[in-house]
Length: 66
Image 1 (spheres, helix red, strand yellow):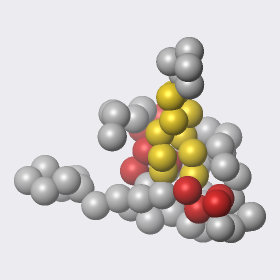
Image 2 (cartoon, helix red, strand yellow):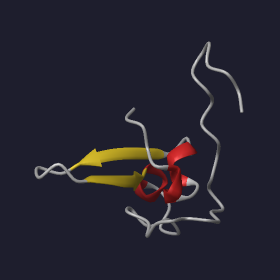
Image 3 (tube, helix red, strand yellow):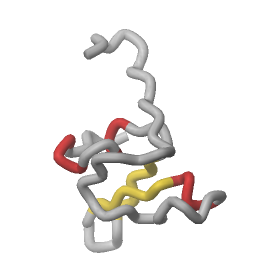
Image 4 (cartoon, helix red, strand yellow):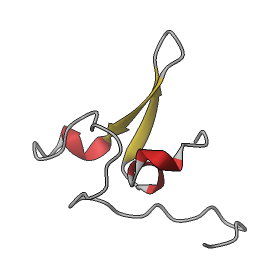
């Protein structure tokens, strides 16, 4: 997963985020929860500061925990 800017709010650290790169090289954050739950926008407006579906993504093995 690419390094995501923490200024985007909760999304960069969420288990359900899927980075999508456009043909022109722009990076968008897609919410995978949107596929099954209409409460969640497919591409949320950033920064997301509150989200009922947020789940923190586990840190990679061997990475220091914050």
